[in-house]
Image 1 (cartoon, helix red, strand yellow):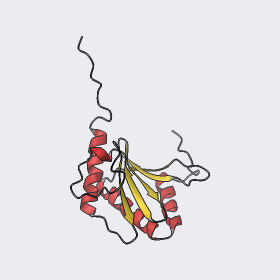
Image 2: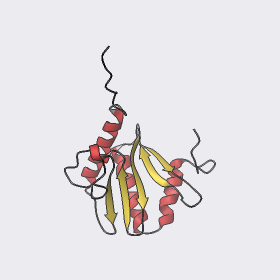
Image 3: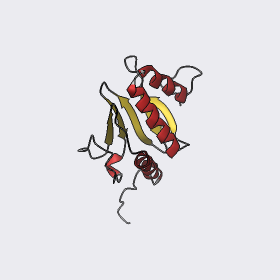
Image 4: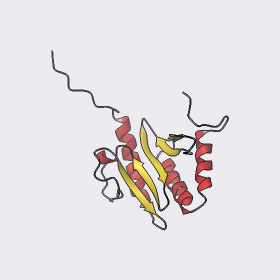
Length: 144
């Protein structure tokens, strides 16, 4: 399978490291810190830059049996969007964005903010468990 936007001979992790380094400010530091936590929660996580276009250097994406979350950077926030966040238990109330959606939930991190590391890792592990539990639920078929 061809990875869109991948440079010849560069792994997705190398491209992600380059993308994060290019930010060169608190957003890069924050995204790097969250990336480290994701990898600690799941050493087998797959890293990719998705949705690469000439005008978009790509969105860091972490997957395990499906997308766990994406890491987007904006002027004033780093946004970690969990693909199936609405199905995850969040007792530490890390989700603070996209709360009205039926599927996704996000964590917006502003400059200087810290995220509860153990609660974040628990969300990542939950997302993996959900992805691995049967990515799509079987349809309810009429018994014949």
